[in-house]
Amino acid sequence: MLAAYVARFSPDSPLDGLEVGQVPDAEAPSDRQGWEVVDVRAAALNQHDLWSLRGVGLKEDQLPMVLGCDAAGVTADGREVIVHAVVGALPTKGTPEGTEPRSILSERYPGTLAEQVAVPSTNLVDKPAWLTWQEAACLPTAWLTAHRAIFRTGGAEHGDVLLVQGAGGGVATAAIVLGVAAGLDVHVTSRSAERRERAQQMGATAHEPGARLPVRADVVLESVGKATWQHSVASVRAGGAIVVVGATTGDPSPASITRIFFHELRVLGSTMG
Image (cartoon, rainbow, N blue to C red):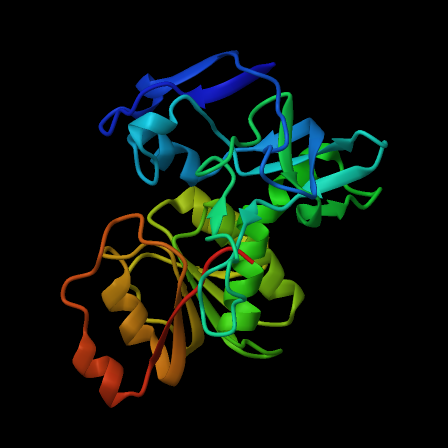
């Protein structure tokens, strides 16, 4: 089958490690029950694909690895589905012994940028008829990450103030749309005037990076890291939450521990829903 895959790692120029060509057809793992093959109708790109091409989360002996976390397609019995990318679970308290360690497609198992993908049956969700294939394929990583971070991890409620750092990416865009729809007062930052304008069109109040907000945030969605961390810590109200879903500019230094403990801030990690 035709697929886009990591042929080699290229930390400085990730696309140099990308190849498109024929790979073996998707098959359910021989040592796993309850898996099935999905004919992919649409797949979505994520920042994770670039990290994979750089060699993050993969080893040389796993190559070639088919890229892609998100997809929508059709099962062998004709069911139209959205593919959920997370396989296994974190080994937290209460996780049943023997549960497979958590990974997402394209880390331990071939991903979705192919004509077919094999996934656990429990990872398949019926595709609403009113969604196009392309829309459905974009939902899992970005939209589940945003939804979980804002409402489950961050605990945002109607009327709360949400600050989204770094407008324009998939998670940030989803966060704006979801926040506005849920009745949150959404604020975003971006260096790009075009992205700020786009965020305003979606119902958010846009600011340049580091700008003083007119009101402190109940929840901050932090995906940028080093470049925005000080602003996040300074912009959240006492007792508020900074929900970290990524760090595209690296780990922050300093970490502002003094302000975090003095204002009783909650710093919470959150991954894909």
